[in-house]
Structures are given as C-alpha cells and as structure tokens.
Amino acid sequence: MTTTAPTSLALPPGQRRMSPRRRARIIRVVQYAVLVAAVGAVALLTDWSRVSDQLFNPQAAADMLPDLPRAFWNTIRYTLGAFTVGLSVGTLLALMKLSTVRVYRWIATIYIEFFRGIPALLVVLSVAYAIPIAYGVRIDSLFTKASIALGAVSAAYIAETLRAGIEAVPRGQVEAARSLGMSHARTLIEVVVPQAFRIVLPPMTNEVILLTKDTSLVFLAGLLVSEYDLTKIGREALNTATGGLTALWVIGACYLLITLPLGQLARWLERRTGTKGRS
Image (cartoon, rainbow, N blue to C red; front, side):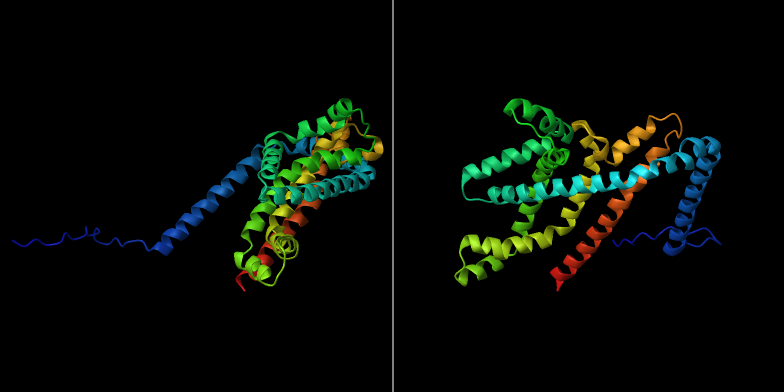
C-alpha cells in the first residue's frame, strides 16, 4: 500500500504569498509609525511653557557659567587622582590574584569581593570620617580623600579586568620568553603585563567613565567653595529661588562633555585592538 505525501494548502484564488522582503518592509513601516505616534503624543502632552521656565531657563544657566570651569576641572582632577590610585592598587591585586602564594590570592580575593560588594558612598564616608577617628590621622586635602576613597573601590574592578587580560595573553608568548632565558618576573613585567594592558584598554576606559560619575559622591567629604565639583554646583543652583531644574540639564551636559569623548575613545581602542588581534 503506497501513501502520497501531504500537499501544502493552496492559497485562495487571486491571493499570493507575501515575500519576506515585503513583510520586513511592512514591519519596519509599522515600527516607524509607532515611534512617530509616541513622539507626537509626548509632544502634545508636554506643557512647553513650564518646561521652558523650569527646565531650560537661559538666565539660570547663565548664572551658573562663572562657576562651571572650576567645577569642571575639579571633577576631572578627582577622576584622574582616583584612577591613578585604582590602577596602581588594581595592578598589584591582579598580580596577587594570580600568584602561586595562596595567602596573596586570599588577600586579593577578600579585598576585591569586599570593595565590589559595598557602595562607594560608604567608602567615601569611611575615608572622610571613620579612618581619621580610628587611626588618629587628619586628611586635610579633599583631593587626597577622593583619590583614596574612589581609587580603593575602582581598584577592585580594575584588578579583575587586568586579571582577565593577563590570562588572555597567549601561553605561547610566555613559553617563548622563558625559552630565551627570561625569569618568571621579567616575563611577567616585560611580556605579559604590556600585552594585557593592550587587551583591557577598552574596558579600562569605561572604568574612567564610571569614576567620573562617581565623583558626584565627593561632596559627602565636605567641600570648600574652591573644591566644588559639577554635582555640588548643580545642588547649589537647585537651592536658588529661580531657575527650577535647569541646573540638572546644565550639569548633565557638562558630564556628557567628559564621558562622550571617553566613550568614543573606548570604541576606537576596541576596534584598534580587535584589528591587531586578527592580523
């Protein structure tokens, strides 16, 4: 007994099957239509008179301009100080995490897990107030406080990034260096670490972006007027009687002037290192 294969259902007369290209075009048009409708609804529901007065007040923005250059520089300065501390401590922690000495690995692991698990806010408060009380020391420089506090937190993340970069270096590079008579320490310093830094450059740039935003916590340590960062300037402007929430947009734009170029740099480094890795 023979059986015939089932045939596909025929389309009704005069109806043709829609091609995948046409279906994709219709879906794309629908998506654009939904987007335009959503934007139109937001535009119609917005009270533009209040927005212009409370959020985009030109006079309030102009009043902030004299203080912005100094705050802009202070924010960059705190970021660079914290990143310097974080990179130095993070490199040491990464090497300890990969050490053959078990105690070093334990110390590095405890540090990394601790500082990755607590908010940066608590670290800033501890460095500014708890540590001076506990050890009887006095840290007068806000730059030093910010560098230590934010750098300590950043070091935990940088350590894990560097560890992954070191482990990503091809094993053949290490074996070739050792075959030339280089010691383990010299191989690590001259061969492994430089290549690891090239691998982790893009995520390291992202860490600088995160540090830039974390400088908004520095005000908790107490600021003089000359030490105000961008966030503190914005908070002061919000307390004025005029201008509404204009300061939020002004300060946000200033942060973008710092972070957007860094984001572009991270993508450029990623493309560059990726190209080198494939060549």
